[in-house]
Length: 422
Ligand SMILES: *Cc1c(COP(=O)(O)O)cnc(C)c1O
Image 1 (cartoon, rainbow, N blue to C red):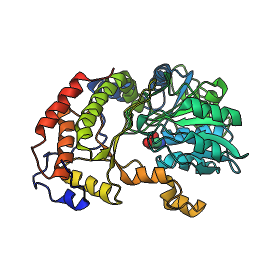
Image 2 (cartoon, rainbow, N blue to C red):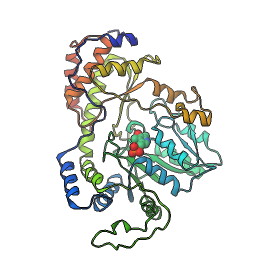
Image 3 (cartoon, helix red, strand yellow):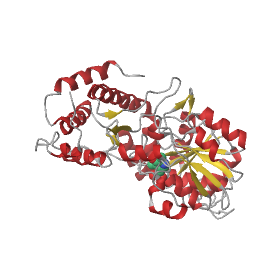
């Protein structure tokens, strides 16, 4: 079967969309437990930072095998605080990847340090350790690898390079709550791991984040800085056991989580492994349906000993025509399928290209991925029927027919139900 890949083909499909209702990209799965817990919090009289945040922190630390977990208002806030407590500022350099959301790099800018971008590996989409090592200068203070799409970075390699050069490792684990690198949990392997609980992430509190660390003293400072710089436990000054008096130890930020958010987080965390198994089965359905079609660069196989958190299923559109990906996204939208782009590489954003003179061509792997990949729906809220709709819509926009691949889909569903990795 020869796919007719030209973007012009994408548009002239059957006028009746594959789905009647729009499939929202990244819609979270919120259960009755979350709803009941939020209602309980709302009725409790204590809706700000409080006991549910602390309970969520404890359970989260246990889950990622971290000594301490400090809840914050977002992953961005967490990255900002971690750079501050690491004493990183003007004159310092921080190495990171161009294939990330802007906030990873914005956090470096916010402390006045210089972000130094290095290209990614074209297969894993993660920072190349060779490129990281080559970018180290006497001013390099930290490296921020990103576990892209949920695929863990090679932490052994990165940690080893960083240790040899006396550099801190702060991993942006926004996609990677459930990931393991060579059998070790992300969250337990570096000075700091920073997680995101944004609405589309694997674990969501609508907005929220968590910093994992093994350093008790730094954990205490993070707790202070996230809440005005108040002395520890001063958050409880309105509670029965708290003292109404409080002291500011240093000027801090307003970066705390609330008990309403933690109410979501407690139950999202409890269902995390179950949701991962659901996404793993969807991943298998996509692989089984797309492999024989030969129209996409599919996600690379997972390294033995690693565990992928299955946050994003990204397909690379072949061949790499500059507009083909966007045309595909538009065509899928008219089939009522929402998709995502991860990411527009950092160096192509005007602020960063203007400030640092970054130009197209400097990070070819990140650029290729940024230009050609599309993220297909991948959420535990979806059903096998939804995934089959996505597959059917892809087939329709490539091959222009509607039902001729139904049999292939049924096969994909069968494969998925037999081939779920636990
Ligand atoms: C979502 C995301 C962030 C930002 O997370 P927030 O919680 O929204 O601040 C940072 N880095 C990456 C890679 C992300 O995908």
